Length: 391
Image 1 (cartoon, rainbow, N blue to C red):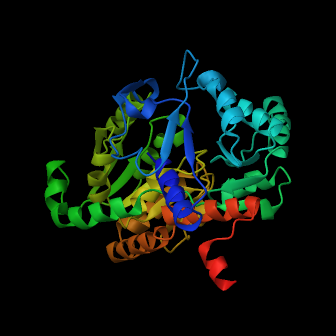
Image 2: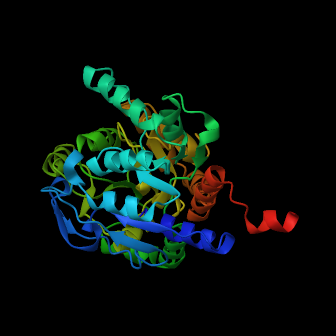
């Protein structure tokens, strides 16, 4: 649901600027179009975002796999061989490197002299073990065959640069969500905020801290619970949106610390806006998170953000002291301090939130389309309509 707007946007700009250029999107599976049970979050769902296949041509390749949800063999799409040999596209955009199909597509593209663009929302990690060493070597081979790269944030750009990729081969397509959709919901829901809060047992003057994520160790929910317990504010509530293996432990810790916390479960795209609309601040304190879309979504609801320095988009989307705070991973004392500042200065919290919405406005799908088109022009020397007029 976060990727398909990229395709419809690119199709439109290609159609508007270059009439003889076409776009075809190859999907390795149709998981997002049907109900699936996801063990990690103990939830069965499918994205309820409408029109995901509208605005571009798409093809679903048969997936010869046992487990389509994870692992290198989650995508085994042998049909990519026939497609590339028969269609021989000018450019192939490969998303990710972690599946068999990604490597197979790259291999066939090089045989056919097809130019390749790579996109993957990944950031540098501080791993120094033998596994990471070999991974780096293998990816160096993969990236040496790629002609150009998309990057979604500073953290992602630094990851690509670590493979000695020149900047003129890198094109910015910002990590984005549907800002128009969320800001429309924000403008609607803000009028019923008091009522919506009351439906969850939240008073209008309560300071509500939102944590929207999978309940796993990587997302660090226990750090928030510990910090929240020390926040000097008489009217405060924790709002947990999501599910995962740590749920029972989180509830037990909340109970032992005698905290006021609400667990509302997993919320789909059409439901999540209500949760953002009743919060005062959103916390994203993962130990590794290249581009958490929940942060973009929260910013569309004028929420200040507290984020760790290990989040890939932290330095791009959070201006420390202006629309939130960037803290060191695992620094519970600093997290407590920042929560106290926001809890006890409502006007400043509101001001910060407005700055969040201002910043996120520039991280949109239109910029994605423009960045992708610029890369295609770079690889094919396309001249757009404006260039032609100048001549």
